[in-house]
Length: 157
Image (cartoon, rainbow, N blue to C red; front, side):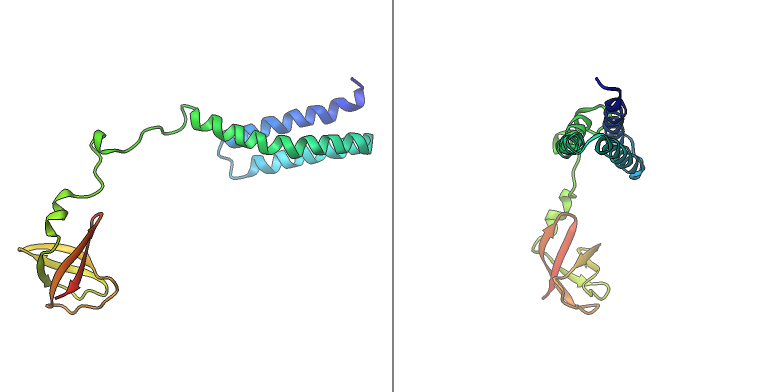
C-alpha cells in the first residue's frame, strides 16, 4: 500500500469507530460531528491524492455510513444495555383499573363543572371524568357512556 493512502484509510477506520461509539454512547451528537469531521478530512486527503481515489472513498462512505448506523442500532437492540422486559398481564401489569368497568352505563351527578373534565359522584364514590367536549354544569345528572383506560367518559342525562 502506498504511504499516501495510509492517512485517508486510517481516518476512515477511525470514523467507523466513532460512528459505532455514537450509537452506543449518549453524546448529544458530539460524536456524530466528530465522525463527520473525520470522514470529511479523510475525503479531503483522498481527493488531494487524486479525483478517482476521492470518488472511491466518497462512494464507499455513502454506502458504509448508513449501513453502519443500521448495524449499530440492530446490535444495540440485542445488547444487554437495552430493556427487553415487556409489560403484560402475565407479569401482573394492569393499565386499567378493573373496577372502573363496573361504572359503565351508570348514572350519577356532576360534583364540579365538567369543561370537559371534572369530578362526578356515582354511588357515593367520587371519580374524575370527562365529556366528549360538552360543558356540563355542577349538579347536573350525568350518565357514563364509555370507559377508556382509566378515563370515565360521561354525557349529560
